Image (cartoon, rainbow, N blue to C red; front, side, top):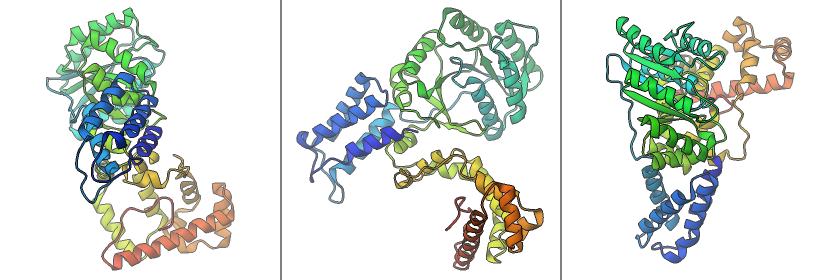
Amino acid sequence: MFESLQEKLDRALHGLKGHGHITELNIANTVKEIRRALVDADVNYKIAKEFTAKVKDEAMGQNVITALEPGQLLVKIVHDELTALMGGNMVDINIDGKPAVILIAGLQGSGKTTFCSKLANFLKTKRTKKVMLVACDVYRPAAVEQLKVMGEKVGCHVYWEEFSKDPVSIAQNAVQYAKDNGFHIVIVDTAGRLAVDEQMMNEISQVKAAIQPSETLFVVDSMTGQDAINTAKTFNERLDFDGVVLTKLDGDTRGGAALSIRYEVHKPIKFISYGEKPESMDYFYPERMSQRILGMGDIVSFVERAQEQFDSRQAAELEKKIRKNQLDFNDYMAQLQQIKRMGNIKDLINMVPGMSKMLQNVDIKEDSFKQVEAIILSMTPRERANPDLLNPSRRKRIAEGSGNKPEQINAFLKQFDEMRKFLKTMSKHGGAMPNINPFGGK
């Protein structure tokens, strides 16, 4: 996410030379490069120009602390201005009402239906609410079935009407059903089109008028750049929505939508979505996003995701096994699963300060764990629980079963053994490490 923008901004900001203070002379080229980086990221030229003008005005003549370079001071100024451009503060969703009704709108292919299930899971697990999903997309083939499958996956009831083709009636009946059956929140998935048309806008407006939602969210594909801004403007004119959801942030997005939409539409970005897993969404924090764009990481979000997967009882048991050098492949696999549930690997790397720069030339694939998982799953239960059983004949069988060469199995087992020894040594010094490095080694 934002790799190209991050790289160009980094080059521009750290090219600033001189000491003492920032002057018109030493900042001119830097500001020009920042503006170019933003335009390349599909930020509207007018916004990019206004943004860099603010940065320049803020920076001019500021005294530079002795320990800092002008470029470091400018990083802070750009960070603050980026944060302000994206809204400044996190804005929560409104779930007042009995039940609270949340209307989801957007174009076809923007990720509406997937987001509906993610939001249901989010509100169910983090807000402990009883959530119901409503299938009001009566046009797209298999749209209702898709929502039913996703609802089942996250454990939420899905309301649908097999023979009705009237979204307004379906939505009204669903809200009444929710009232009668004690649901706290109703999330209404609506139809999208490949482009904005009058029929679509009339229909979504009628649905909103009929159910009077406490929250209306516009879902936008972040990879569509300025097109996303224009679509958001059109929807906002008709719906006056409450907030924006940016989807597909794990893709090759240039960042224009994230940086521009708050400025253009005057509505906050409330959520981001970055994968297919039910838990792969979060609130939108402008300051954290600004930090990530500038390569400063987002350690707060990283820790929050880790804590969601952290099992204190399991960690205590793992520490005991580490101290006794009894770590086995079942433990290793459990740790891999925890890390995988935290989200996209590249996304996690970008959250750790300095890590993305260190690994910028390393090709880290999302299926990095598959080879290790295949090796472990090719072992018998007894072998997983007893790593020392793996003699040459067993290793050969595991290699054949996992699609690897014997030397790859040997290399993995060597790494695993070294890791066990390292963790045992750490534990003796009072620093046991519950999270195992999924790439092997120390």
